[in-house]
Amino acid sequence: MEPLDSSIGCLLFGDGREVALAQYLADAGVRTVLVTAADVPSTAGLQVVSVPDVPAMSRAVLDIVPVQVAAGALARGRGLAIDGFVHHQDDTKVDEVPAAR
Image: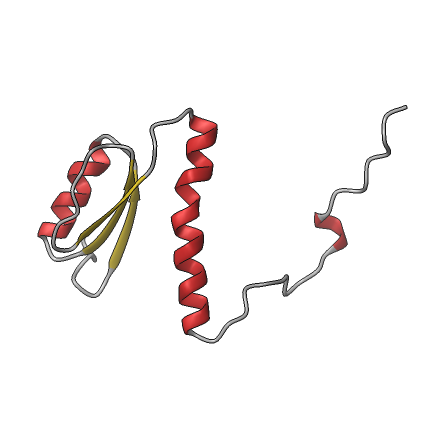
């Protein structure tokens, strides 16, 4: 927390203590994004991304979507392609499973 200042952005996920932390950081001048199912308004310095309150497995998928959108926008802004793999490694792929008989 000590190195956080107005030149840093902070991304938080959660519905509990993360809400108070996001509000604290925004008040301290740290640009903050909070991904949450809690009813929290966006304020100066705090952008809230609302997700539905769903079971944990579904929530994990919903939480990562804003991150992927932001990463894509940042990459495109730097002129980087994001539509394929840079490195192809055979040892990280699952062999095709034969169909059940």
